[in-house]
Image (cartoon, rainbow, N blue to C red; front, top):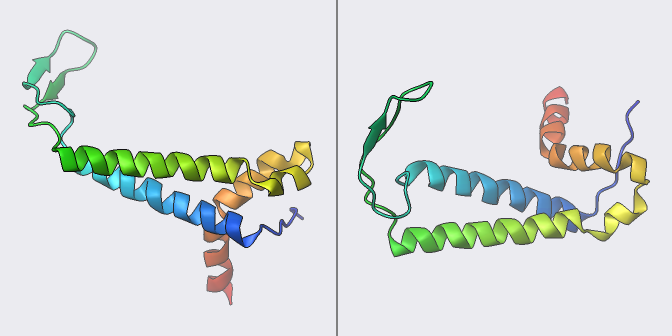
Length: 116
């Protein structure tokens, strides 16, 4: 049977917020034009596959600020989660498994709730 970890509530909350921030950032980046700065479109079929991009109007100052805000928060949360005092309590050889469990704790919780 796999080891069960008692993650502290602040670590769980930090990991959950990190998931949310990454999802929000990913969705925002998918909506934005491909180039931060205004750029002409191009087509290149000299490589092993054709690459085409339409003209990009660039990102507005508000869009750039929103991306920067989310990236900064993502970094803060990643540092918080990865340097949390909890990891000192986990044997060095078990930290990768424990970290993986933390990343997937919400999926495991959802599966357990479905079984009940």
